[in-house]
Length: 113
Length: 113
Image: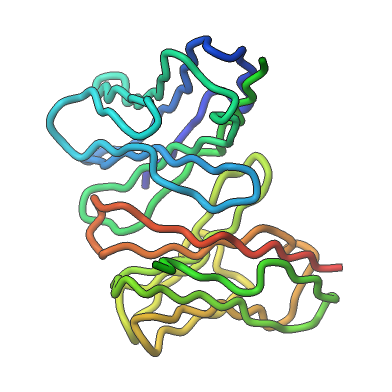
């Protein structure tokens, strides 16, 4: 079974600064990787996903993530954040052939002016 | 386009009471699941279903029952509520293949006193 570790529980950042959210997973088989965002008092919505192919994946709202198989990581980045990016971000993994998602504990991003 | 609809949005129960959290999706998705979200723990899978008439346990199934009589509906039942079940509950659905997006409801915030 896989586990997902989000290395930072809280990330404060100033508006227009870059941000990186770190995610590591453990799995012995092929995986599919996802980043979800949860705005206050809302459900989760998909930011981006890695299934196969190019290791650099672009998502909505200017986010991108890079899959690194040797380091079993899937870090999320945005070069310039906005106040509206304040939210909780979850990394999730599903193992090949399994419908179930395993989530990390989440990273709360707070963007300040 | 409704997507995944959860009711109620908020609920307060007394210890020992029972209730059903409702979840309905209008996307004809085969795969549906229930998660609970607790601070610092991310989302943990309670139960899931890969189609009508088929359900299975997730990571934290104790104290919860589910059934799937139709493709659209996947209710979650708490038979005898306990304070440890105070949480935010999310229902999600997907097409049924592990590499596709999961769509989440808005959540039900449950407090057991």
